[in-house]
Image (cartoon, rainbow, N blue to C red; front, side, top):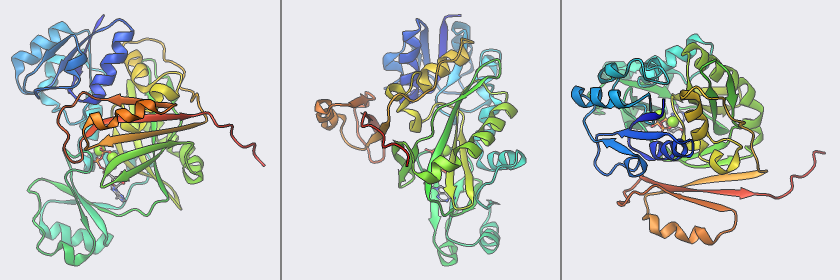
Length: 353
Ligand code: ATP
Ligand code: MG
Ligand code: MG
């Protein structure tokens, strides 16, 4: 087949569509929002609500394979896409609910932050009794970039807190040395390849920076984290790029969450790996051979451009070794990802002592 459908209209879809074009595919974006930045680079667009069953059926009829760039796409309206979806939607079902996700990973032997299901203030009291504070209250569904999360510093903070009116999870705050993600691609035949793991820095729950090589704590824990990520991918019979976020702690890696998709912490792979996460996702879902994931430079840093007008970033074009990506978003808002820059360094690496 030669037409790829992408559910979701953000920058991840845009970068997938650009890679798909390199391989000669036609891309159709399905996204409810006006001014989708993925639609700007797609051959066609369905600007329809997720639950518009006629539009979904028409979209299905035009696609040979359908994937997603956004893990909060509702699963039920995807029924007409049943035979076309890659990865399988069971990955969405698991990753969309923080409670189901943590239970699933624990069953595979992974370690998570201590957590409790919270639907009432009595549940929250009991959770703080058992887990302690500080902690974070998170909605089980629909969160991203730290949205739908509330830090609870002390038991006192929890008194009189207004719950968001949707099922939540309370997590103990993990003391970590660093954060990192394992990004893998799994082919239709079950073959798995990993990219190197960058060290990720977040501010206010939003990824700001990914750096390679990572600190020692991360480097030492990548192998154990990869084993868990591999089990997750195998258990989901996953096809495509899968990301698992971890905390590197004094006691080893603690699982944070899965993103069943290409990931912001893998943007550096566009210039810094033989085959990028976007190219390998397209290859995997189309049943093509996977590409080499090897890192190609000794130093790499990806920095997000968040909340400021994209035009102010064009100074970066004068910087040697800096690769600027702007997502085509016209309105800057606080916390909105407008673009990113990847800096590739070629300084010789000091020989090991
Ligand atoms: P994403 O955009 O990655 O999907 P999200 O909204 O799903 O983000 P999380 O990954 O749950 O949010 O949390 C965002 C960040 O907040 C984490 O990367 C980490 O920096 C911090 N954080 C979240 N949960 C915890 C925790 N239990 N202990 C310590 N820090 C945490
Ligand atoms: Mg998330
Ligand atoms: Mg996260």
